[in-house]
Image (tube, rainbow, N blue to C red; front, side, top):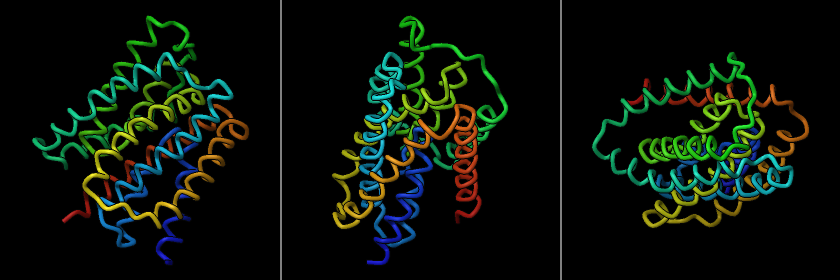
Length: 251
């Protein structure tokens, strides 16, 4: 039972932190679950469903405050849904370690952009001629990378939207909505191959719900746009560091 408690606390902490950036916590929770002795497919299934739960709650909160740019989000959801399976098929043919090195390098670049680059803010969601191509391109690349690497595409979406001039809070909120669909699609794909641990899901769902509520509150009410941008940059650096560490320690 102790491993379930540890998993629940870890879910609360990581979900709170990553909800601020509009990201799901699955990519961190999976290795945590594995370290606790939970089978891989079960860990992936539970973590992805927790992603969908937390980002759904966060998205509801963000929608109430009109932070989601739907003209950008909807094309992203469509493109990500279509291209994610193609990325998964490509992953079978390509060396994953090389892809992970490239992806970690991108995260370092994206994190640097978040911390040091100051774009001129634009309302990219106001003009449909601009927002639809942006959403399709960003969602397509994020979906393909998500399927290719087995990670959330939110790591690509957030910095891209901010780089294009979208307010950091709106970028995080818009990404959260996209992550709901990509995570649930991933859950459906993985759950058919793994056994669902309902005790683990129940305990961690509590942490996921509390983390989503707390994280979305902090993002909306307690942090400025600059602080959100800084938090996203630091999170991306931490994710990159974890990937680099895994690659360097892999046997």
